[in-house]
Image (cartoon, rainbow, N blue to C red; front, side, top):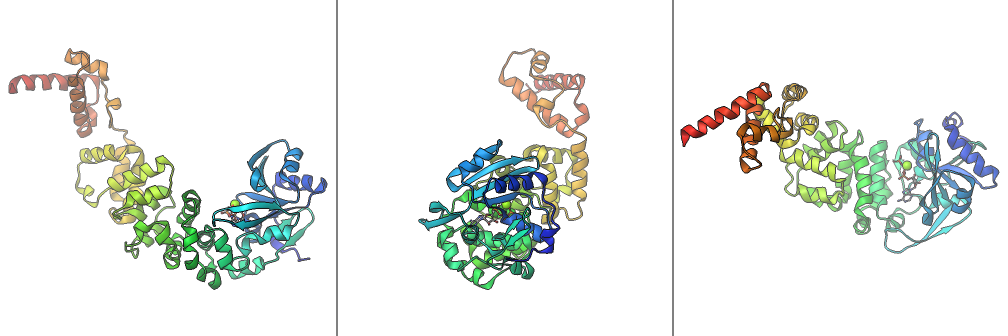
Length: 414
Ligand code: ATP
Ligand code: MG
């Protein structure tokens, strides 16, 4: 029996999570808080999500609670909804025979906590706490590793990495997010596991990499990825680029995904293929692409407001804040003065698209005295050019006057 650490004795457990544990326990099923939640409590932080490991089989859990989502029944996981959020409840399990380094060939449910903890990745994640009974289990020295601030595999690192190729990346991610060191044996096992890492689904890699990229200590994470050889496998497009300037920029920038990704990929020849590899949501990828293709350049300080508005149209005006942050981080706009000017321009909500024109398609046809025809498109483009230069011209009367002027001009040149 291990003594209960003070941080756990004083921990505040949300009422919904506690009553879930009580319910399982009073039905006769041994149940514990496990994993990252216990780690966070020990570090004096409030966990973002809660995991429970239990002796109860998934169908037994399902019978006990009303609001249950069968998120991963095959792996013994169901999600129980409590007022404070969701709790993943997983049956104690042992994973046998990893066939391809991606997922266990079979999951065996065992009614034993220590075996469940033994299949977890790192000692700092292999902790269990029962706030109802005031009990704590740490069979692999996780608390000591937390104190020494290190990420160490449960068991032999090379074997554990061989079972699941995502673990090397998770090791680097935890070291980055927690600002811990990699245990030397754990780090030394990474290069030998790169072949298994290659088999891991891109979506699983993405989730870990994005957590790393958004951490305050992202620079260290990028350096660790390079040092361990993971970066070459994760984003080979970045292999040849010099990251001496690149990484610190990422680290100094606001932790906004699109901005940090753009900073990472700026000047990379095959940025598009790197983006594809990250399996980002379409909208995110599109935004990063737009930021890379239409960055706010340093010479924009010498542009007219009209030129800035035309650039805004190319970028997509909803992305202007991101472009500002990016320009500040790349040094295109170190003091943020250009960004401020851009902010004022955007705040004035100038007309930027045909929809913003004071004359709609029908009004333009009427003014031209024509029906639907290419002439309408030409006139629309002409008017948009005019209001991009001079937004104050965007009233129905002034636009009609411009169209009349244009018609006269056309006649004269003919
Ligand atoms: P975070 O705070 O980022 O959510 P976490 O520790 O909760 O960190 P999760 O990815 O949510 O990490 O996983 C929950 C727990 O499940 C981990 O703490 C660990 O015990 C176990 N786990 C997750 N992924 C693996 C894996 N690939 N191999 C072994 N154990 C894992
Ligand atoms: Mg978690």
